[in-house]
Image (cartoon, rainbow, N blue to C red; front, side, top):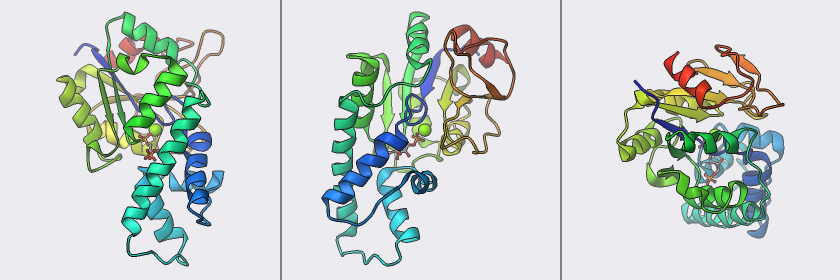
Length: 252
Ligand code: XBP
Ligand code: MG
């Protein structure tokens, strides 16, 4: 059991994409289509219980809009709305509008230097991952990840473990030799379902989630000068998460 690879969730983990990235992109797509659907910050927090943008829209209609009469082509309409939403999100991300969370860039650079293998396991659409990485982390950084497992590549989204199983299979690595990084309960259920030790960094939408089973729950990865806070789990006595911290956590 040696630490060989790190698997990262994207939304909420690498960057705070939900409130000011995905949410306004959905709202713009709804508006462009002449729909009176609008997701404010609080409602979006509730809708996040359902992963996947298309699945989230259907959930919204089924649970919050009993007044809405679905057209016969509702499924196609949702797919098209989601494509429009993805274009809006990509434009926002391409303007560099979504910064990486504290410590993410520093840790990725150190991990690469230490020979750790990197992968992504996310529910979001593949284009969203590439555009975010290339514009917020830097040109060429999508290539830092040997596998980008994303979106509809597996039919069952998080909290199902399928996306993690897919990434592990592609990498040919044992779950026992990896660590996963997540920010949400659904994400943690997925990583734990794939037997991955998981480090959680919370955000405003996920603070109250149930993170039982996580190896550690932190405020963020921390930076020199702005230390991380341990919310649950062992205090490894380091002000920020670096590769030495990850090796200690993995061996713990
Ligand atoms: C992310 C999601 C995604 C995003 C929106 O969850 O659930 O649906 O909110 O992206 P996780 P899409 O961080 O657990 O992977 O609209 O492309 O689905
Ligand atoms: Mg997430």
